[in-house]
Amino acid sequence: MNEKVKNAASRRIPPLKFRSSPEAEARVLLLIDGFSRTRNGTRCLEGRVKLAKLDFLLRYPKHLSRILRSLDITTSVSEVLDENEAPLDARMMRYRYGPWDPSYYAVLGSLIGRGLVRVEPLSGTSGLGYSTTPSGADLASKLGEDEIFHKMIARVKILRRYLDKSGSTLKDYLYSLPEVADSTWHEELV
Image (cartoon, rainbow, N blue to C red; front, side, top):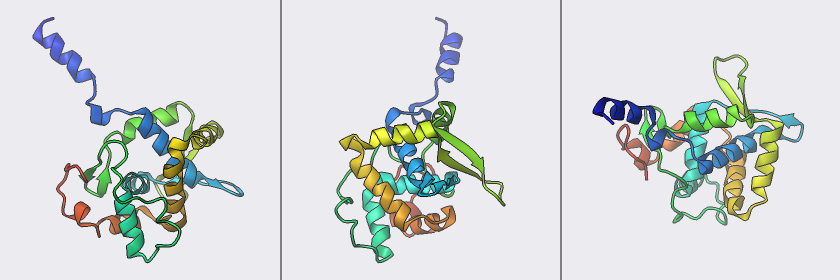
């Protein structure tokens, strides 16, 4: 294979950090589902900024615990938050508005393309919201039956109960963490 053909072929395959993974898809589906369901039907998780901030806190239990403590929320959360637990999945990077995972576009595209998540315009804004479809909610329920997802689902419930705020408010909470505020763009967060 000549060098031009080899280089062209290698450019078509996106770097690993831009690819979706089954673990990331399951985590994002559970997060969206946790913010989609209500007793009276469905609602949506409002925007990618909010999704990214909530996902950061879901993936990094030590930072979730620190933010909850800063808000004087300590009851009933310590049993599902192990500050020594390693971050889930790949590490996130610092971008303009805080933590971001370059694979979000692929993850969301896969979930939307397979009919598990729907995108909805947010009323009164140009933003978009995400909610699970009936088949997405069904898959999330099935994932919830597996013990491997129990801690993650418990953290999603904590996020929904205590941190169902705007993306901007969540960004402000995250910038109170030196690991986020002092990092440079494209630096992996720990």
